[in-house]
Length: 148
Image (cartoon, rainbow, N blue to C red; front, side, top):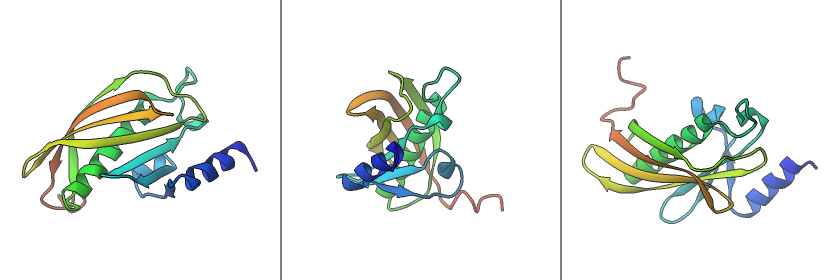
């Protein structure tokens, strides 16, 4: 058994479940999820494929993880209405490295009938490494059906 398998076993033992997702979300993972109250947490175990030329986890991965987590949390809070990101402001606070487990969590600041204001963080072992504020718009129909 290698270190990655050991880490996966430890994540499963603490309630995380690995997910296979379609589309872009499937490319940034594998993605891990865990139900926490009042929302879900999302995670990625950083690998060499997630690094930039400097050898640290690429900021694009952190941003994509935040975008996915915040939109999924909003989707669930809006009774599974699809929503799209209108704005995502990300602040990088510290670097992440290969082998670290990146955990994303978020919460709704305010929701109207069509807009959701969110805040979220990515942390490693409890230390916040990125934070974000997002504005999402609830879609009237599934984004896949528009323009079809």
